[in-house]
Image (cartoon, rainbow, N blue to C red):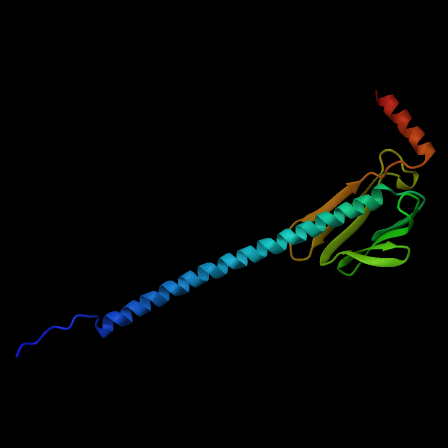
Length: 170
């Protein structure tokens, strides 16, 4: 009687192959998960940076056109303007910045920390060296966002002073 040898894999070979395949799958899965986490992190930061830029652009629009009665405190400003109609305000409360128009308040940006609004120069007189700075940070992002705005000179007296200043510089 002759014994024919069976061709195939032994049980040990099959188990070793499955163990190696499992190890490769674990490392491959970790690679995919880390890639997705990096993508989500960068997408979230990009969205926050875009929100911050839009908020800074809107704040610049509001502050650049200041005219009329203006009042400031460390967290807000209020103005009655002719260029942008109505009583307008920018306020900070909690972790949000709000923009107000005629008593209605709208959220401009949220999830912020370390907000400040500062006046440089003699702003109530709107001299040529006056500016307003707004700075804020996101609570969970490094770095901060800021803008410095020089309000346009709105009154005729201020326009005359501006012409005199620039003629003097030439």
